[in-house]
Image (tube, rainbow, N blue to C red; front, side, top):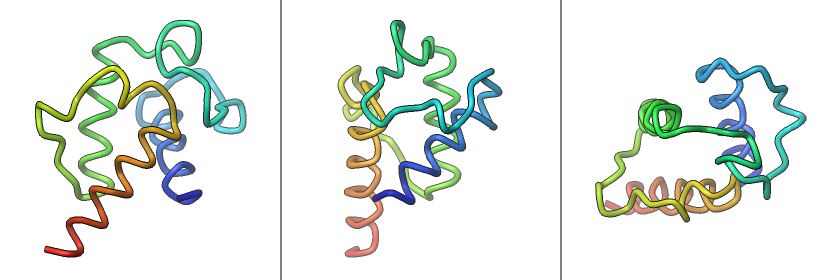
Length: 88
């Protein structure tokens, strides 16, 4: 799970080109306003990068504010998706 969190943080910092360091991102900090400050366009870009780098697909029904509330919830979701893909 820690590797997944690190990869998510790496995507946020490098691929979304935010002026924040990976070490500054706490696993519980909000990805939205009041936290990292991702807007809807940044979230869409994050989804695309997560799909590409983790080899997963987000169904429309799965995309919600709670899922992207912080690194922990996102990492748990990705772990579930990658584990379920392995079982197929």
